[in-house]
Image (tube, rainbow, N blue to C red):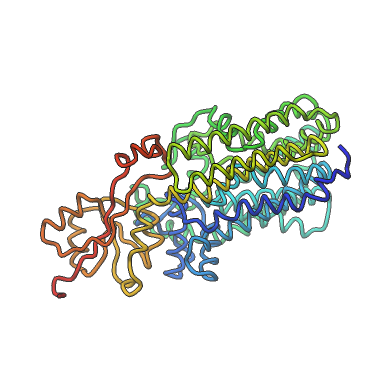
Amino acid sequence: MNLRDPLLHRYFPWLLLAGILLNIPGLWLDIIEPDGALYATIAKHMVLHNDWVNLYGDGHDWLDKPHFPFWMAAISYKVFGITGFAYKLPAFLFWLLSLRYTYLIARDLYNEDIAKIAVLIYTVALHSTLANFDVRAEPYLTACIVGAAWHMLRVHAKAHWSHIIWAALFAACAIMTKGIFVLITLGAGWVIYWIITRQFREFINYRWWLMLALCFAFILPELYSLYVQFDLHPEKVVFGKTNVSGLRFFFWDSQFGRFFNTGPIRGKGDVTFFLHTTLWAFLPWSVGLVGGIVYLLRFEKNRDAIRWVIYGSALVTFLLFSLSKFQLPHYLVIEFPYFSIITAHFFYELAKRSKLQHLVTVQTVLLVVTLIFISALVYITRLENGIIAGVIALAIVVGVNLVNYGNAMQQILFKGYAMAAMLYIFLFQFFYPFLLQYQSGMHAARVIPEKNRHLPVAAYGSFSYSLEFYSPGEVKLIKSGEHLDDFIDTAPCYLYTTAAVADSLIRSGVDAEVQASPQHFHVTRLKMGFLDQKKRSAAVEPRYLLYIRDEGTL
């Protein structure tokens, strides 16, 4: 491929801008339950209580994820107020940082062309974009991993000593985001590289040990917070037990306990889970990734050994995920920068040999399949303005196929971006707004008037993280009828509950007025009975927000 290809040099900034813009609408959509709303609420509790040490969620001391993402969200709340946008913004900024570091790694290990292709691929990879809408830890974690990885490459190249500090800082932030296992992701590729090249002296190189020492110094705020919240308070009940050590959980149970299924949070792993998950999560580039891995194994294994820093990291991390007993699709997102580089290298090598046409055909087929998928979903759900969504998708397919392309690489990238545009416009402008109509807690919270924002709010019989986040203050989780009676005695107050509980309270003589009765469905566990407009009424159920008056108030 000509290094003066007009797409990569003249139009690269415009395609990149288009990809970033496709990610932005999710920032303004409401936070979706469960995890995103839970994490947003934990950061909200930090700000309301000005407590940056203790994590509190689900009605109790919360020990699952480390502090770093919550600190970032809480800082954003301080600046912009406690809103969904403020929760998502810092994660989005970290994602932009991960684009930059993906470019730097690919440029230094390959060349500028591959770096640009890799960034374009990563920018619109499906689950990366979804992670910018349904924000959890992954945007932070990915940026910190690739940031540390690039600075480690500079340390290896004996660049300025400041890269040791930056590598340690990014690694520490990654650890304070997800846990100590991050060191395996960061170090595995280097260990493989040193073994392949017989650079055994690197295992005792002072630079790496200094970086590791600084890394542990930088995670002291996390260790201090865990020690103060849990280790100093053995009487606290965590995971149904007392004498729970936050430090032990951080260093062992949160990661290795899940891997070996011996910790308090367990799952049922399937070694093939991430193989088939990758095929949809990395769309529209999945076929290119598969081809890139095959190409790597056939032609790359004995060339440019330094690249095994990323190959080894990607491989070991993928194996760890696959062998783990606790598996969720969004875990894969931290692999996407490396997946993008592997795919970009494959595209580049095929382009030099003029052998990209088969992949162009694949992208065209994916475009048509996406159009059919969107059309079918519009038809089944009877989305409001669904016809507009279908017309937009059709116009994109027709338009991208009418363009005159200079080469096959341009076709692959443009058609990949066309598919992304179809999908993300549909999801963020039509489908997710439809789903969020059935996130009942959020709608109940918004009914509470400004003048009553000081009144107590509680949930009984049904709990909603979005209720907790979007309510003016905190929400009390009531677990027993006795505690419910105590709460009602604090009237005037608000109670979020099921229709059966609301009816029972009103029948028993509680002076309560129904303020809202939004329809409820677990929108992250979609079922055909809900999607089908004809059957939806049987799949949803109402939730009630009651305003309970003080008996002495007229």
